Image (cartoon, rainbow, N blue to C red):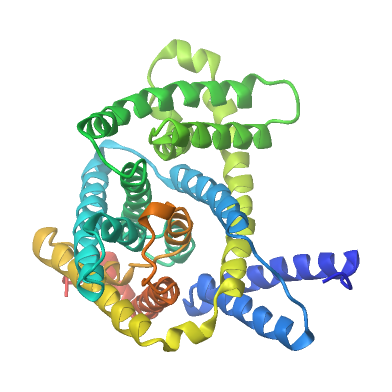
Amino acid sequence: MENLSAYTVLFTFCGLIILSYLFSVLNRATRIPSVLLLLGTGILLRYLSGIMGFTFHIPPTLIEMIGTVGLIMIVLEAGLDLEVSREKLPLIRNSFFSGMIIFVLSTLAVAGLIQWFLPETPIINCIVYAIPLSIVSSAIVLPSVHHLSVEKKEFLIYEASFSDVLGIMVFNFFTTAPTISGKDVTWFIASIPVGIVLSVAVCFFLMLLLIKNRVNIKFFLVFAVLIVVYAGGKMMHLPSLLTILLFGMVVNNWELFRWKPLHSYFSIQSVDEVRGFLKSITAESAFLIRTFFFIIFGFGMDINLLYDKQVLLLGSSIVGVLFVLRFVYLRVVHRYDLFPELFYIPRGLVTVLLFYKIPEWQHIDQFAEGILFFVILATSLIMMLGAMLYRDRPVELEKTGELSSE
């Protein structure tokens, strides 16, 4: 480790960024999720470092820190991509219920599976482990829907964003203390309207920073404020991730506000300038953080864990349950088009981030860490299969709306 020069580190750092960009280009051409390629790069680097005699220790705190910043950027990026209108309210409603109901059913089913495989484990601990595995990863969905129609793209972005926010809120509730009281339940319910009110105040404060601030340092100051809001909300057990999502949606839908004094203070033209630059710098920051998060995660994983019997049995069962529940909801309850929405069940950044934040008193020692890697890998491969098959659909029928739900 000490033999590495500064130029070697810079060469490696920038080379990985260039490689990640090429993976993004390859994703658009082949529909192979870039997260799979990034994980593979991390595994390859682990293998090469072992051959060369280099040893690196990656502390979980580093993964958690990068993942938290990446989560904030990705949720903000999602908010900046979402357009709200009266015509889209049914789409927003459907995606919300899809994200919420599938998340709840998946959590209960996966918790049941964990307790069935590990019968001595308390059910609360099983639920805590099931929550991260039940959250759809917006970090993987967002860069993988560019080839879909506008309606399908917006449905999946909304659904993944709602799944992230709801999943993190529920996880924080179950990991607050060893015992859950009625007071905790009351605060959890009351925190939602409190979080919405806080979101409104933060939104206008950030708009003030972006538009009225005369100092050139604006955008990273805003990101610093968002991180402080997120961390502060976490300490107060508030849904601070909802604040970040709403801020992005407010900036992207500023024209919906009809109050004239507001537009005289924040003109549409000035908001448009802020929106364009904010989208650009947020997308690039999310790309950078996503790159190193998944490479580091892949580097820290031992591929030999996938050969463990428990990993294969429990991991396959979890993926099967996630797929079946999504099929049942989209087909029977929602009556939504199954293709390719059925295949978009990736687990990723939020799953890893929450997995490393499980409190000591809720750890399940018998739960193999390779299960986490197996579920992320398998669900990403399923999404890749759906994306590749969707490319071959008849374009002319899709445009005229003549495709059946089958």
